[in-house]
Length: 146
Image (cartoon, rainbow, N blue to C red):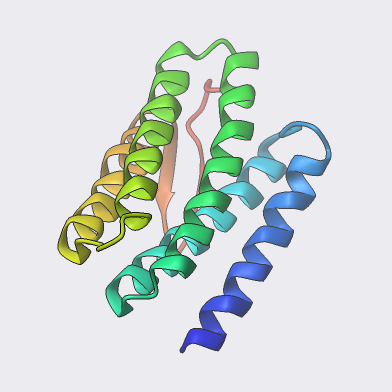
Protein backbone atom coordinates (compact mmCIF):
# COMPACT_ATOMS: atom_id res chain seq x y z
CA UNK A 1 0.00 0.00 0.00
CA UNK A 2 2.80 2.37 0.85
CA UNK A 3 4.47 1.71 -2.50
CA UNK A 4 1.18 2.50 -4.24
CA UNK A 5 0.91 5.80 -2.36
CA UNK A 6 4.47 6.75 -3.30
CA UNK A 7 3.87 5.93 -6.97
CA UNK A 8 0.58 7.81 -6.96
CA UNK A 9 2.31 10.76 -5.32
CA UNK A 10 4.99 10.80 -7.99
CA UNK A 11 2.39 10.68 -10.76
CA UNK A 12 0.39 13.52 -9.21
CA UNK A 13 3.54 15.60 -8.80
CA UNK A 14 4.51 15.06 -12.44
CA UNK A 15 1.03 15.92 -13.73
CA UNK A 16 0.80 19.01 -11.56
CA UNK A 17 4.34 20.08 -12.45
CA UNK A 18 3.58 19.74 -16.16
CA UNK A 19 0.75 22.25 -15.87
CA UNK A 20 2.61 24.58 -13.51
CA UNK A 21 5.80 24.43 -15.60
CA UNK A 22 3.88 26.34 -18.24
CA UNK A 23 3.67 29.21 -15.74
CA UNK A 24 -0.11 29.19 -15.51
CA UNK A 25 -3.25 27.27 -16.29
CA UNK A 26 -3.87 28.13 -19.93
CA UNK A 27 -7.43 26.95 -20.35
CA UNK A 28 -10.13 24.41 -19.56
CA UNK A 29 -7.95 21.42 -20.57
CA UNK A 30 -5.15 22.43 -18.20
CA UNK A 31 -7.72 23.16 -15.51
CA UNK A 32 -9.26 19.69 -15.92
CA UNK A 33 -5.81 18.10 -15.67
CA UNK A 34 -5.12 20.10 -12.50
CA UNK A 35 -8.43 19.01 -10.96
CA UNK A 36 -7.65 15.35 -11.67
CA UNK A 37 -4.24 15.78 -10.06
CA UNK A 38 -5.88 17.44 -7.04
CA UNK A 39 -8.42 14.63 -6.68
CA UNK A 40 -5.62 12.06 -6.77
CA UNK A 41 -3.50 14.00 -4.29
CA UNK A 42 -6.41 14.53 -1.89
CA UNK A 43 -7.35 10.85 -2.08
CA UNK A 44 -3.75 9.76 -1.45
CA UNK A 45 -3.49 12.29 1.38
CA UNK A 46 -6.60 10.97 3.11
CA UNK A 47 -5.45 7.35 2.71
CA UNK A 48 -2.02 8.22 4.09
CA UNK A 49 -3.55 9.96 7.11
CA UNK A 50 -5.83 6.97 7.69
CA UNK A 51 -2.89 4.56 7.63
CA UNK A 52 -0.69 6.76 9.84
CA UNK A 53 1.78 7.60 7.04
CA UNK A 54 1.93 11.25 8.00
CA UNK A 55 5.08 12.08 6.01
CA UNK A 56 3.38 10.75 2.88
CA UNK A 57 0.32 12.84 3.70
CA UNK A 58 2.48 15.95 3.98
CA UNK A 59 3.89 15.24 0.51
CA UNK A 60 0.34 15.29 -0.84
CA UNK A 61 -0.41 18.50 1.06
CA UNK A 62 2.63 20.08 -0.61
CA UNK A 63 1.38 18.99 -4.04
CA UNK A 64 -2.06 20.43 -3.31
CA UNK A 65 -0.52 23.69 -2.06
CA UNK A 66 1.51 24.07 -5.27
CA UNK A 67 -1.55 23.36 -7.40
CA UNK A 68 -3.69 25.78 -5.42
CA UNK A 69 -1.15 28.54 -6.00
CA UNK A 70 -1.61 27.99 -9.75
CA UNK A 71 -5.39 27.98 -9.28
CA UNK A 72 -5.18 31.27 -7.42
CA UNK A 73 -3.44 32.82 -10.42
CA UNK A 74 -5.99 31.34 -12.83
CA UNK A 75 -8.99 32.73 -10.96
CA UNK A 76 -7.28 36.09 -10.33
CA UNK A 77 -6.70 36.43 -14.06
CA UNK A 78 -10.38 35.66 -14.68
CA UNK A 79 -11.33 38.30 -12.07
CA UNK A 80 -13.44 35.81 -10.10
CA UNK A 81 -12.99 37.16 -6.58
CA UNK A 82 -15.24 34.54 -4.98
CA UNK A 83 -13.16 31.74 -6.52
CA UNK A 84 -9.95 33.44 -5.38
CA UNK A 85 -11.44 33.54 -1.87
CA UNK A 86 -12.27 29.82 -2.01
CA UNK A 87 -8.72 29.01 -3.11
CA UNK A 88 -7.23 31.19 -0.36
CA UNK A 89 -9.46 29.43 2.16
CA UNK A 90 -8.18 26.12 0.79
CA UNK A 91 -4.58 27.25 1.21
CA UNK A 92 -5.31 28.27 4.79
CA UNK A 93 -6.86 24.85 5.46
CA UNK A 94 -3.87 23.10 3.89
CA UNK A 95 -1.48 25.11 6.08
CA UNK A 96 -3.45 24.11 9.19
CA UNK A 97 -3.47 20.46 8.11
CA UNK A 98 0.27 20.56 7.40
CA UNK A 99 0.83 21.93 10.90
CA UNK A 100 -1.22 19.08 12.39
CA UNK A 101 0.72 16.51 10.35
CA UNK A 102 4.08 18.03 11.32
CA UNK A 103 3.45 17.88 15.07
CA UNK A 104 5.70 15.73 17.23
CA UNK A 105 2.65 13.62 18.08
CA UNK A 106 0.05 13.71 15.32
CA UNK A 107 -3.61 13.71 16.33
CA UNK A 108 -4.78 11.33 13.62
CA UNK A 109 -8.48 11.98 14.19
CA UNK A 110 -8.02 15.75 13.96
CA UNK A 111 -5.91 15.34 10.81
CA UNK A 112 -8.55 13.12 9.20
CA UNK A 113 -11.27 15.65 10.04
CA UNK A 114 -9.16 18.51 8.65
CA UNK A 115 -8.50 16.57 5.44
CA UNK A 116 -12.17 15.87 4.89
CA UNK A 117 -13.10 19.44 5.77
CA UNK A 118 -10.58 20.75 3.23
CA UNK A 119 -12.20 18.74 0.45
CA UNK A 120 -15.76 19.52 1.40
CA UNK A 121 -15.33 23.21 2.06
CA UNK A 122 -12.91 24.02 -0.73
CA UNK A 123 -13.64 21.64 -3.59
CA UNK A 124 -17.35 21.51 -2.83
CA UNK A 125 -17.73 25.29 -2.73
CA UNK A 126 -16.02 25.83 -6.07
CA UNK A 127 -17.89 23.00 -7.77
CA UNK A 128 -21.19 24.38 -6.52
CA UNK A 129 -20.47 27.80 -8.03
CA UNK A 130 -18.62 26.97 -11.23
CA UNK A 131 -18.87 23.33 -12.22
CA UNK A 132 -21.48 20.86 -13.35
CA UNK A 133 -21.40 17.12 -13.91
CA UNK A 134 -20.24 14.31 -11.69
CA UNK A 135 -17.26 12.04 -11.13
CA UNK A 136 -18.56 9.41 -13.57
CA UNK A 137 -19.48 11.66 -16.51
CA UNK A 138 -16.84 14.28 -15.76
CA UNK A 139 -17.03 17.87 -14.62
CA UNK A 140 -17.11 20.93 -16.83
CA UNK A 141 -17.51 24.65 -16.31
CA UNK A 142 -21.04 25.96 -16.18
CA UNK A 143 -22.02 28.08 -19.15
CA UNK A 144 -20.73 31.63 -18.91
CA UNK A 145 -18.09 30.99 -16.25
CA UNK A 146 -15.17 31.51 -18.60
